[in-house]
Image (cartoon, rainbow over all chains, first blue to last red; front, top):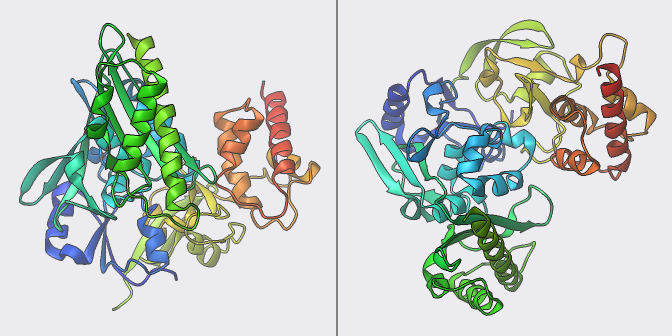
Length: 291
Length: 162
């Protein structure tokens, strides 16, 4: 058998799952889709003493778009997001990004909460969450709290979640009027980890000038990188070559890719710059059509 | 640590099974070793190669990335459940006719992936077939004959059920 021995508990309620996590702490892991945790256990890179299976907690899965924002339960699988047209319309960055996430077999099992809690910096969803300004709803037996996505990811494969807490829901703002977005990434093969990926959201004023820009990258640092702040010079401008050049340079200065076996740090920077230009261009165009 | 054992009940290819399993037993190993359904192949055992793909409640999943205990109460379909008795499923027939396999190791995973894909998308383009195949590695064929087979299978399935 591949994984080391562990005690398996199928939780029958969220309260029970949280009580168990409070009891076992770092010894225990929640099992959601298992598409990152089980491989790590098969390699024995992860050897949790206790697995708390939350797949039976139906209340943790689902999409609620009835309010001003969209609430997505942590146990919602990629497959469900991919097939929910209302969700994709309200959060079109997902329509771009979901096909890049692994393969269909993985998307049938993997969950949004598991992905975000795993906090792989090469993963697409953390960058989407940061670009969109998502808010993470976290629960424990002690109570609940809300974190901005930008405060949630604190390092390589690590989040601000404490040992007794669970990410239970993610709140995404619906795409604003006169806004357009675009996600692009380059990977060696479809479904592989990104050499670099860019999520951009551009909002235009009535004169088709940029009034707000949000941009985050995956695959080029230890966490998703929020480059929105360094792109402030685009505000008030149209999508010119000059503006795009400035944006690519600003993003290049904001990232610290480490390079890996598939791509040197210089190549990652190059790809990040090219994708920044392309994603912003597409987001401008889409925002123009939405205006 | 004493083995953590659990009783599970599940349906595989329409047949009900009840077994006791250790918590850490992967679903792929359970199918092969406990149920003697060795048509599900095990390649990388970390979710990359796709050889172990089975249908869980109709959707293709990696059986090496699930615990057997998690399949409790669910319906599985494996490669052994694809043909109708002696009659090959159209995608099996098409793989045969188009020489879509050589060593055959990846084939069960590809067939299970494609069965669900063609049920959902009966009129795929070549690009869509290639996209749907992206999670299944084949080191023999170069994929071309598999793609040809799947386009032919889609055609055959449309003809059979217009």
